[in-house]
Image (cartoon, rainbow, N blue to C red; front, side, top):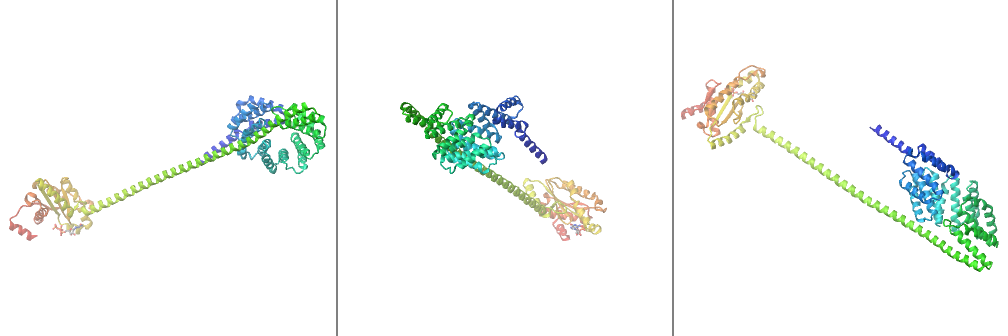
Length: 587
Ligand SMILES: Nc1nc2c(ncn2[C@@H]2O[C@H](COP(=O)(O)OP(=O)(O)OP(=O)(O)O)[C@@H](O)[C@H]2O)c(=O)[nH]1
């Protein structure tokens, strides 16, 4: 049974594993994913090929394919369909790796869309499941880096720096180190905590050696900002113009605009207004709804100052107006980011407190349930105890009753023959006599005594005598009626009370018993001999309803039987007073 269960568990585990990361299809999807930056054409081609066999994929593999499609959509600028797909995977997938990847891409899209609140909330979610991808350090670090980028974008530079530093402490990936150092540098520049330019230069060299040119050049912009503050305008121009060509080739507009605006600023300070105007104009021309406002504001400011210097007041005023307008928009955007952070924090706190509340409610519910369970257990225990008490009481009552019955039996019946003993027989007879007297019924009594019983004992032993005594009831009960009372008076003497029985019938019964006793087969005792008894009979018509008198008269008749040769029945007849006295004296 246990082995069967173990096999089932193993099978279930194998099936779950096959459901995603162990399968061939999953591995192939991972290979396609790796192509997304290095070979976008092959990436798109392979996705299309894979879609043809979508009906053979299991659910999680299908979600992975959808994820790759969303990357493709994102690259082609179809952000809304990409968001819908990723949100679907985020909700439905039960594979942490896939959920994590979807969240990372979603956060990036929300950053592009300036949906700061949504992005921040997803960061919280990403962190809550990040421990489940611990075994994939690169993905784990990418999650933290995504958060750091996002925090720098909403100008929460302290948080950005904290998360990027966290990656730096543990990462073994040079690429992740290049990115994290860049993020730390960015936050240091805006927090004014950068100590030395070497920090920036080291990062530039590292990213350069890894061919991570976007990250390398982002560091160039931070170095330029730093040098601008140091009034080292010539150096700024040198550094930026050296790499401008390669930056322009990246098509990464955010970086390109930052380059232009910094060059415009540096040339302005160097009083090369022509170059400055050229770069500032490039910023203005290339700015659109998706690019940040900061380079535009900076470029408009430069243009305004140049036109003013050139005494082109009309143009200068025009740039000033534009500058004021975009500066306001930029400040509003910063305010919006701050508000988003606060809102997201508020929502997270609210969510956490709701969870806490739910947990508390859950705890209360659990407590209630365990109390109810305990109560039910107590009730069951009480019922069991009650049942046990009832069983033991019943058992005790039954045993007491049994003992009572036994004791009563011992007190009322003769242990050897099983019939009434003398005392109980007398009691029963007295009750019967009262009833018969009241109802005017005749009552007869038979008294008999075994003949020469002593010689049986003497000849065959006491046990044989006992055997005879034990066998007396059968012939008696055969000859009497159910209502008749039978008792052992002591030794080998027995009596029978016959309610509603006249003398003649009683005599006949006595004769029946006598003959029955003679028929007793004594072979069973081990000896062969004849059992006889002498009988005395009287009736209430002659002796009255007094038990003692009836016994006395039947005894006299019995005595007569013994006296006249034994093994006979004598009916008591009222003798003349003298004869009576004579019999008494004989006794
Ligand atoms: N085995 C046995 N013997 C008993 C029991 N009770 C009394 N006896 C014996 O019964 C005998 C009665 O003897 P007796 O009174 O002399 O009378 P009997 O020998 O029957 O002679 P008759 O009555 O004159 O015929 C005695 O020997 C008693 O010991 C008993 O329970 N078991």
